[in-house]
Image 1 (tube, helix red, strand yellow):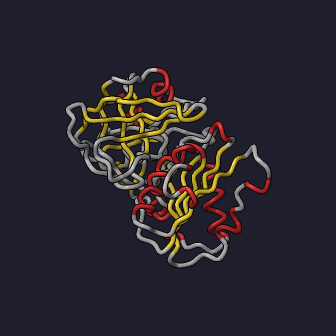
Image 2 (cartoon, one colour):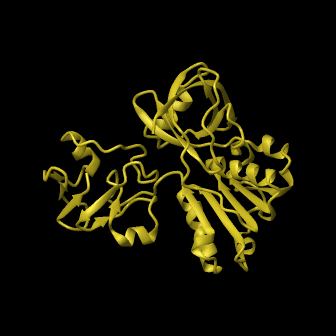
Length: 318
């Protein structure tokens, strides 16, 4: 997919450690359309590429707006946005992509944890415009860390949004079990945020009897993985027949890159799916959050940026 050149036309501190970037075309033309739940790849200073969800009205084509949390464990992306990107800068981005599509539902429940509010807010805007039946729950540590709170409270759907703060009294905290009790076939649930928050929402819904097809999620980062037991294995490239050893302390994509085999990589955590490749032989050890459980079980594709191998040899369709 071709890249787009955009200019940073606004940068706003939305909450503690959260900024928004407003991006517009450098030539004043309209940007490609997007749907609620979509994200873009942004090429940042230092050669870093990261994915950020679009949070503005999906009917808009004159701008894209993203929100970025400055992560203390940042691998460079969020720090670059906060400290190196300024109004007037020109950036390369991808056209919008969507792996978190809204489906037409009789009723929709939206759950946002922290910076996971960005795609959820875009969904709320879309659902409001279509006069859909929905409810949004936004969970944060405290009011000063609640990005876009003023915008939400001033919106036409403010009465559909409930704020929950870890720092507040018990009465206002999220009562998830009651919200997901008695699931209905026509109701769909969407959740985005930190891994622990998503797992909590998804597992609670599952225990309440929700159908898997009615629960939709998007992770913002991968959970920590125990790598102490990692060992080496061989990766064979089907197109050339060449094999390379992947040592315990390197990823498949690192080894392939060192040997001149190109695989596109972005998040490096198994969240975005950019590096997805087909597996022709062998059994992957899946460590991504991109593929579904059923896709993991099929073992015919994998994310080589983070996943490894259970078998001595993996043959990849590259």
